[in-house]
Image (cartoon, rainbow over all chains, first blue to last red; front, side, top):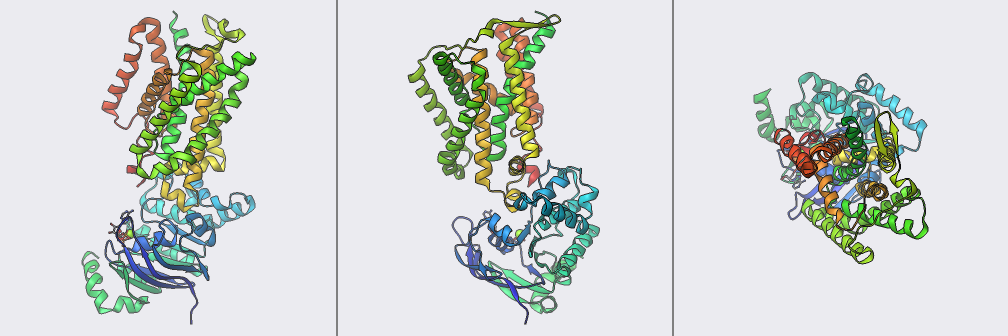
Length: 244
Length: 291
Ligand SMILES: Nc1ncnc2c1ncn2[C@@H]1O[C@H](COP(=O)(O)OP(=O)(O)OP(=O)(O)O)[C@@H](O)[C@H]1O
Ligand SMILES: [Mg+2]
């Protein structure tokens, strides 16, 4: 039996009036790469916003490492060990790459030695942050920006990394680089929960898969089983297969 | 008058504008709030300075840190007490609120100080000094230099301190800032406090340069809004450049064609905005690029 690290039970959440998430149940096992797939508007990013504290759930619980983290502020969730690389651009465009990564250590700013140690660790995992240290983040290409976002998220040495569509808008070479960093993170013992539009790519990379539809989890299981599931295949694989 | 002298004047005046406008643009950058009460803050500080100076005969410049700190606290309190509740309703409501604060402050100042000019006239008020051919009155010199020193201090603070970095981060990408653990409320109250502080410092400088009465706040807020729109909303470097343009153009116009002075600046704003609708340096910080 594997050990679950992050659990959502019957989560309801929305923006304003209606509910976008209508009772989401989700279990993520420690050290896995779990990939959420589903159509546009299914509520995948909203799941991340609830976990990271950017959106307060209206019902249900979020448990992380045995602790209820539902409704904590983003900074408290971050300090508890969950970092997020969001779908939209998240860097500070007028700061240098170095300063962007440094800001990832905002929560540990008083511990200079630790900060230095983490900067070195991140530079090793994401060499780009050292190579382009002085460049303005706003001048980077999409792939480079993703790597800096990942580097910034690693500054707090998180146990869980949430990645929302890490391949979105990237050229194939950048996608491969991002995929290899994701594998590295898992190899280091981190748990990766990611969202991916490209089901083939996602399930290839992941160990576990989750299919979401209309604010609910439809299927959850081994990545292989999800990829081989005829229903999923007809829903998405066919579609992405066209473009591939 | 010698052109060089006129330009020196303009640069010193521009320094004072730059300090005040940086406060407004910093607040806008972090909070998306247009602080139309900055003129009132400024006049409040100037009249307060006049009061203390006329009661105690104190050197008014000693009040620079006092008024800076006082306005910081008042700004911080206005954010925590009022703005934070109204902010979710969007920019329209916050402008209305700050306009209300401005009018209320002006009303109180009218009751306390009366609707008449007050001047602070320290011993050096009428003295001046010469650099070559250029004659510069001490009040202008002191104000311009002090404004630039305070602005430099704010710049270093924003660049080098963690709190300053957090402010810039919030201004550049709100979600990104939240994701690294920066509290939006803390960053916003700090930004509003610093913005108000520039008016506190500026008020003392204003008091030794010009006579002040409560309704002068309208002149000032009009100039400051013009500057930050021209510089690009939220851009401090833009505000500094626009301030220098305004200072120098006002100084040139009032030396040669005094009755046309305001037309120069506002005309220039119109023309520049036709070609650069985001202002001189405005486009980079806004959401359309960050999103
Ligand atoms: N900030 C917001 N305010 C209001 N509604 C929102 C907001 N963000 C998302 N929504 C709505 O919530 C629903 C789910 O959005 P969400 O971003 O979670 O979907 P998603 O599965 O991530 O889709 P995509 O694949 O397009 O990223 C959508 O109908 C969307 O319009
Ligand atoms: Mg999404």
